[in-house]
Amino acid sequence: MKLNNNNSMKVVVILLFSCHSLFLFSQSINEYNLQEKYSLLLDSIMENYSPFEYSEIPIDLPVMSDSVIEAIMFLKKVDSVKIYEFSFVMLLKLYNSQLQCCHSSYELFPPGSVLKDLNLIVVNFLEISGCQINEFITTATVYKFISTNSQWLEYKTINKEYFECTKLYNQIIESIQKND
Image (cartoon, rainbow, N blue to C red):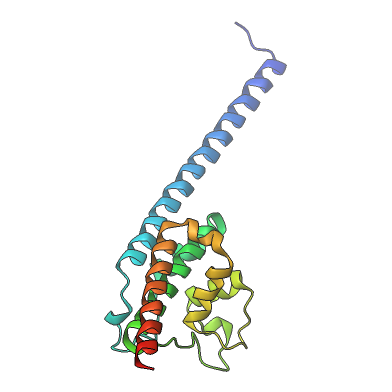
């Protein structure tokens, strides 16, 4: 079969298109692999996070490693729901720990804080909740936000932590009422 210039051009175009499609496909697979890897990383952190590891009085979120920050920044572009799930679970665990030790909740950041200096978990919460950095925001604020935005309770991890907080809060209230 003899190729003329017109047919040669078609073959070149088809080859270029095929190469470009293959490149996009491999890029898509790499992105999916990264998304899966980073999601598993955040799942592991959520599962293993215990605020009491960091302090007797749990008021701080964990300091994040570069790889966790990288995971959050990547997932924020491709799966923001995962980031919000991660943030809610971490903050609810912190709230639960504060209820356990002190029967109270503590502010998420001191007055006068600057957004760029906040833990990314707090920044993500501010983003989705619409709360402002100049407001007084405690870990209980997260609990109340989920109470009024119950669609987040469809996520097992959030649901579990939310109801752990509810159970503990109700026990505290019952204890106070018995003592009155």
